[in-house]
Amino acid sequence: MPIRGRTPRECFDKFKEHIGPMIAQILGAQLHVSFTTAAGGDNCHCDMQLGTPHQDYVQLESRTLGKVYLSLAQDLLAKPCEGAYQPTTLQYWYKVFDVQLGQLDEPLFRWERSPVESGKQHCKHHFQVGKVHGDERRRAIEVHLGAGMLDLNRVHLPTGYVLIEDVLRFLISELGVKPATDKWESVLRESEGRFFREFNSRTSTPTP
Image 1 (cartoon, helix red, strand yellow):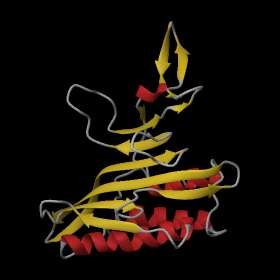
Image 2 (cartoon, one colour):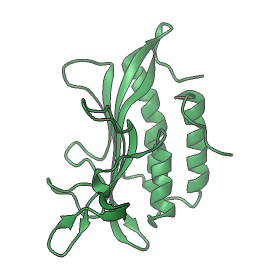
Image 3 (cartoon, one colour):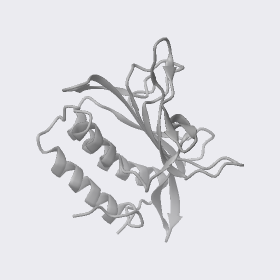
């Protein structure tokens, strides 16, 4: 049964009550997840963000890589449904940075669900590789493909709907980020199960 609320705010609060504690369990209780109603008075739209209003990312410690920086954000909509409201994710941006963010820094890895701009045909759900450190400045990774070179920074690799839980699992298992609990895998599995039961059963369910 999908989560529903009598009002848009109740709908968002129920989602926050799920996602906030889960992230805190995995990455540390000091982390903050904020839900801000969209500008213009449209209380059916809400922005979810990991971090503070003045810093939309968090610093994490990796056992092997030192410092890693993470940004998680979603654009949420409370949709009327059978006399109540039901949350849905319109867009998401999950980003991993290898340097502390400045105005011109772009993520090393990013997963996005975003509208395709007019005239473009890439997948709505996609993954991209950012620029890496070069001799004097950051540069895109280029690989040989056929008779030409492929700029990986411009390639939108298709994905399915990417869960926040999958990004957290990637940070721990692939990048060596220190989890706040030894039971992180069971916490993520439980959270994924609740997502498919109560939030969005239409996305691809995880393999048992």
